[in-house]
Length: 229
Image 1 (cartoon, rainbow, N blue to C red):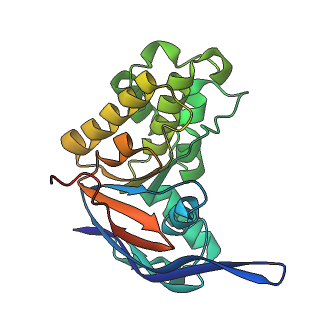
Image 2: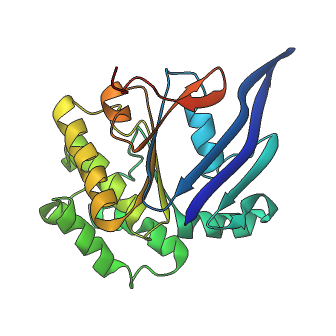
């Protein structure tokens, strides 16, 4: 089952009189249960690509389909609803709301979707799964960096999205917490067939995908760094 299909995506920005081409003829197909890693240095366009694939930004050219729906044809209101129901996001910075408890932060996407009360049981399952059961009434400032990022992951999963998009999710973590987060992501794929797409500049993270790509000169190429000689 195809979850995401991107066809000939192009994206440029104008800075003064200059025309900066960021993405050029991006083609990508992701099926249910895939763990896709896209590697590339800072500034190569990884975040721009993820924002387009996550419907937070629009390409200059090309088509994007998610869950068999051409999202480019949706109105802004319909697109926001679709995004909330089908896509989970995790960023390098956790973006937790400091005045809300851990449980309240997790339930924000469910509140937006109008199913906050129905999702409380799912939130408790996520707390247990990610080892945060004793932290649900804590505020973000009372949590460690690793706990905050796991909480952000819980928030991304509470609406049971078809695809999880993560932009440098280990970028602000030490090695131990980064490894733990990747272990959780692998378990999500192996146990629950969660579809995952990660952007990263870290080769140790990039090698975890069953589909490994490099974003270079605005195009996606197969990542050959991990092939056996």
